[in-house]
Length: 393
Image (cartoon, rainbow, N blue to C red; front, side, top):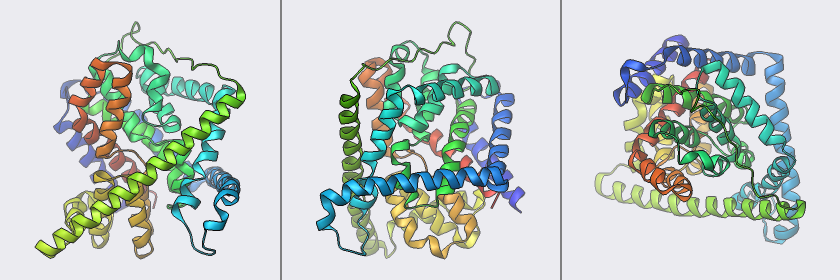
């Protein structure tokens, strides 16, 4: 049955993507097939070999240790405000983001991350035959996040075609920022977080190949990575600290606003229709969850979490998911967890549009015009990643 639901999930993604494809006749099936095989091989290695399990264990322990170290600074500043034995989301999950941000800044400062991102992207471009820029954005988005990534290629943003821009933005919205990966790991099983980041790189490019197929000429296939302004080491540390604080505050504000809004909508729907808004969303998304491999008896609960992520953000959905995950099967937990690891939600349309518009006004308007289609494509990428993981659970 796992293979059957794997195929139904693939057909679901393919059918929905073809429904809105710009050019159905020129879909590049060889590139899609190659990347799909790569996903299956990587997922198998990560879940079924000693080497893969060891890698996941190492990454999980590394982030756990980093969060523990980050908490030392939090305890020094806020220690007296904590209630012993009671977890505080802002202090325990969001504040350590500042420390992770500093580490990323250091890795960027010494050119370690840029080199890794660039050459992994080049290897991928050889694998899938897509442009160097597309693969660079797909990989770097998984590290830098959906808005910051465009700063590294700002010279090229104004000169690329609308088709290429759509693929780049889909990759950005399908990724997450490594600065908040540690926070995800406090709410979801770390192994699903690690594999989702890897799968999403390919899933976004696969969906982009179906919705938006095109060829890149040798003249267009250039990669010019923008050098950031050289700061002193301690200036970089200070900026990284402030960047981490901004992320923590923004996530906290989004959670306060969206959770309160969802509760208000739930209250009104219950008052008028005697059924909660999230339950309705669950029924709407339950067929999708079922075709991805979620058992039918759990499809409504899973669908509700998936829909919550789409209309709010991944943190709100994860907060709700932690409350019910103990009552769900391992298969459902894995599929939903992987689905949640991306920035694919309505608010991200504005974030990506704003990031591009800040660099090039005309291209920003283009992103705004295909904003809903961008969300559609990145959501399909999340569905594809969730479907693939379901094959191994």
